[in-house]
Structure formats: structure tokens, C-alpha cells
Amino acid sequence: MEYELRKLGTSTSARVADSTGNWVDTLAPHWARPYLRLSRFDRPIGSWLLLMPCWWSAALAAGMAHDVRGLPLTIVLFFIGAFVMRGAGCTWNDITDRDLDDKVERTRSRPLPSGQVTTKQALAFMVAQALIGLLVLLQFNRFAIATGIASLLIVAIYPFMKRITWWPQIVLGLAFSWGALMGFAVTFGHIDVTALVLYAGAISWVIGYDTIYAHQDAEDDALIGIKSTARLFGAHTHQALILFYGLAVMLIGIALASADVRWPAWLGLVAFALHLASQIVRLKIEDPGLCLRLFKSNRDAGLLLFAGLLVDAVMRAA
Image 1 (tube, helix red, strand yellow):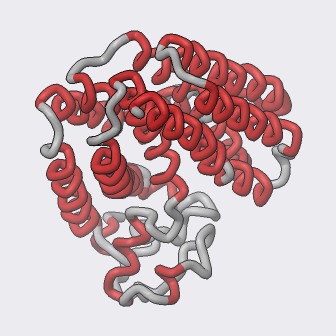
Image 2 (cartoon, rainbow, N blue to C red):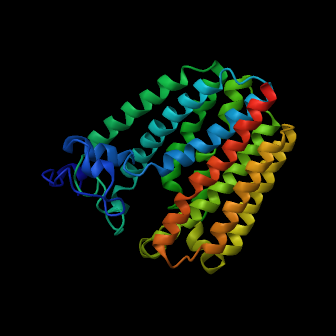
């Protein structure tokens, strides 16, 4: 049955099962709540995780350029861009997954499968968010604009990957790590080897944390035939995380060495590595609540690394 034919009388205040008690549920106008939930403003962790590689690359590139004068504005623009483009990506994901979300306990109360909005309304909202993202992108140079637009192809195909490959987290990593290239594109007008190595490190990080996240749905995914690295690794998830988190730390370290950073950046990397190690030690894949908490904690891991890179940039520009 088409989702436009669902009973549109469903209350727009109906809460999403895996996100309750947030500001959207309590403070936002009733008419806006389904749209805010589509863009995941009720759970902004994904926006923060999309933002982290953007901020890493912006700070690292500023340090290499020995010039932080444009860094505050770049940080703010990346913040706005990450939140609106993650919202657009999540809206697209919900549009493509609306039939699947209806079969998974954690997601069937989302706005589309629950009938709070129609597919046409969701599409219009997605376009509106993308246009805001474009306005942000237009503040940068032509190369950065082209680089940002190029990421849309990956974002467009990601929702379909879990239907055809056990490695959808790689495609998510390609999309969510794109910001590791953007800081260099904005600062230098080109992408060099340092940026590519930082990008590879960020991809490894994304594969790791999204594997943890995917363990929440592993049982439902098995029932409906959805593939993920969580199902692929299964009981060997801890070993896989050692591999991918280890690769992330190593590759980011190579990027820092290539950029000739000073001690604050290295201190940030050490803090980042220790945080990832603690996740591996604490993880219990059979505990969905713990998986979600560990997944969310990656924002703090990313901020630790960013803090080190930011201090390094300021020191080198002095």
C-alpha cells in the first residue's frame, strides 16, 4: 500500500520508539515534530559524527597553512552544513527505507512508516534542507563547492547498500568521512595526500562505530534480510573493532605526521585512541542499550582529537 494512503490522522506528536523525552517531544510545535524527527534533530549524534572529520580537516589544514584567521567561520559553516545535510540524508534514507522500517520494531514509529507525513512531504522537506546546505557550500571556493557536491552521489546510493552487500558501513564511511577532504578543499583549493590519508582513517573509524550501532538491529535485520557488518562479524565483533579502530588511529597518525603537527595534536590522538580502546573493552553486543551509548560516545572521541588539532593550529599560527 502506498504510504500516501496511510491514515494521515496519525498524531504528529507520536513519539519515535528509540528517541523519547527529547526537546522535540516536549518543546517543538506539533506540526514541526515529524519533520524534525525526519532530520533527526531529536537525536543529533549523527550530525556530530558527520561534523567531526570536517572539523579535524579544517583545523589540520589551518595548522599546515599557519593561518587560523578563517578557521572560526569555517568551523561555524561546517557546523550548519553538517546538521542540515545529515538531516537531508536521513530524510532520503527514511524515504527509501519506508517499507523496511515498518518491519523493524525500533523504526516502525518513524514519521513515514507511522503515517505522520507523506512521501511527497518528506521529499519536499529533503529538498529544502539540501538548498540550505547549498547556500552554506556557496560560501567556499569553486573547488570546495565541487567537492561538496560530489559527495551527494555516495549519499544517494547508501540506503540501498544494505540490501546488496554485507559492507554497507564502508559506503557510510565514504559519506560520513567526506568532511576530512573538505577542510583541505576550503583552505588550499585542492586535496593532497595528507587529506586522503585522514579520509581513510575516518572511514575506518566510521566502520567501527557503525558496526556497534548496527548490533541494535541485528536480530530484526536477520529476519528481513538486511545485511550489515554487525551480522557479518557477529561474535568476532571485538576483533573486527580492534582492526578498524586500530587502522583509524594509525592512518590518522600518518596524516598528522605528514602535516608535521606539534605535541597538542599527538595528545589529542592519544586521547582519541584510548577512548576507542575503552569502547572495545566495554562492548557487549547482546546489550542494545550499551551499544547505543558506546556509539554515541564517539562524538566525545572525535572532539578530543579536534581539541588537540585546534590547539596545534593556533600554536603554529602564532
